[in-house]
Image 1: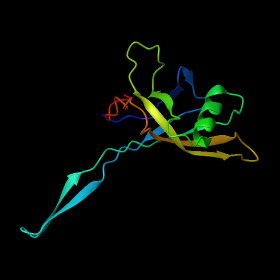
Image 2: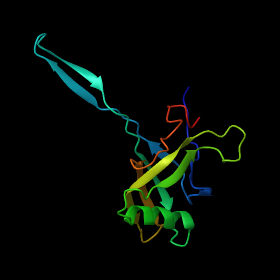
Image 3: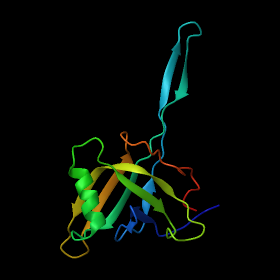
Length: 143
């Protein structure tokens, strides 16, 4: 079923990130080549799933979610991750489901145009130091 335009919501803890209109969940799995000398062929195995998530948000330096994302990006600690929920419904909705887990911030890039709204591009990845593995990362998690 085709889908068009929906408004994504990204929560840091229980606070919604300001000005996010959509986000990209780029699920990927690399292939691992396996060579067989006996058969003379190369076969492939599935690698680990990678779930980078990219979004743009309004640059609001006084907003607590903006500060939390910026602090997580600037931190050098391995265990400084954020509890982030991603969905297209309010968390209070009866049918709420989304991607939940602990994440690190790998990109925090601000663009400040002369005429327009300042936006910050953010990329997050699954945190290795966390025990909370992301759930609901199937392709229908935001329908």
